[in-house]
Image (cartoon, rainbow, N blue to C red):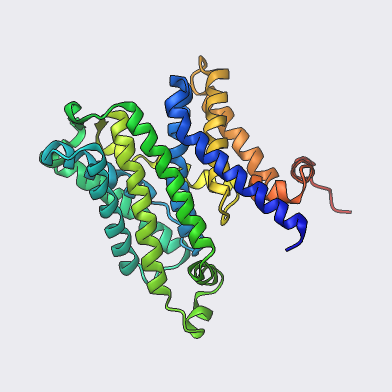
Length: 329
């Protein structure tokens, strides 16, 4: 490595460490509004890293809300029915997500592309229907309230969310430096060629989907402690799947820092539009959507790609897109 590369690596590590310290420290020192924003960013980082790991193997999920909702129900039921504490309730939430992810990997072992994506969407919708059909367990449309006597305080919930985000990124970093990463990338490019080279796609699919499901369910388990209430529509809300896709695409899909950058930008854009046009019904959501479309058009490789290629590249692409088409001679 050249001196410039070494200097860049040191700066990169310093930024990562400072970000992690800031995320964990804000719950102790920040204002309530700042702590709330950091909590939402932390949870979004967890689920977006989870989605990005699957996408890195060529597995595009449309059903991450299924993992999220499953983790939420596992956490709240373990607390209300078994008397689990906050920390202990996250264990069954994480395990359930891993088991469902592994099972889905086996069931969809021969599905690729859009067919796999539809199967994950069907899984999430199936869980929602089951939650509605067993009101004795889930409360049905009436929902469930978390046992308030087990609530550890918002500080503990916020700190665990931040630590969970840091741990998730560390796991993704470790995978990015392992042979596992190269096998997954090869699967994304050409799964048939992988098999010819001796790579077992099903084994790697099994592992990455179990890990991804565990992460997303862990995020759902934390979120239910923040809200204190759960029903099928809240648990399996499609917005969780959408946000888990927007953040990596916005920040830079298939990259380590992309989901983190995208999560910060997604929450920040939502806050800015809400504060700017909060009094106009639907206007903030419309502006939020327009801004996202503009950014995605101008940054096809995400924010990280724009930073790597130069700050002016995205503006040139956007202006080129906005030009009217030339008429044929």
